[in-house]
Length: 224
Image 1 (cartoon, rainbow, N blue to C red):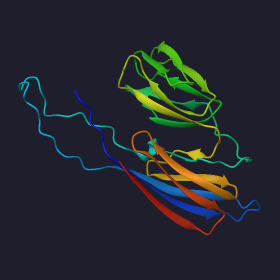
Image 2 (image 1 turned 180 degrees about the vertical axis):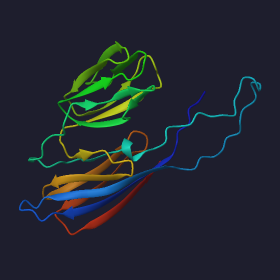
Image 3 (image 1 turned 180 degrees about the horizontal axis):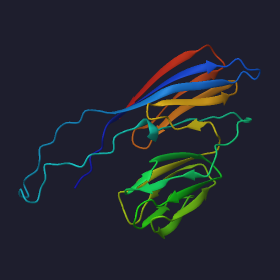
């Protein structure tokens, strides 16, 4: 059975707001939207007999802004901004990792509580960030620390369809948008930065923005 590759459109709108502060820091606000492109209907294959085929197709995971990570690709060399708080949590609930995408700062610990009433396993075979927490029952949890910048693909050995991503960044200038797509990056010192939006399926889009500046809006789109 062949898998279908969905087409997505990722749109990133950025507004630069310069705050009236002595350090002339700025806030980058914006919205992210993800929509699936229309797909051609495929005829149902009955060549193997009506009792061995189905007209129903599995529903793909709906694209969501909460699965996007917005961050500065070239963060300021020094900053007074504290690292994001931890430990971070990625739950196992109804055979899914929640959240599906989790951005963290390098050096942070991620906890994996099992909220189902059966065993799960958490592992990754990404080079440089390999780990295997083994199998643990419902109500139990395990954890691992991530020290290197990477995109870690998390899987469950028992349930092969379970998959998630941990985006490890070496600075605190990142965020995951709300369900509405709204995001906010604060305390950005003066300078020129590359703002990037990343999604595990739709890919990424980036733009260069200068701080400080007059209020501006940048609209970006990327088709797949």
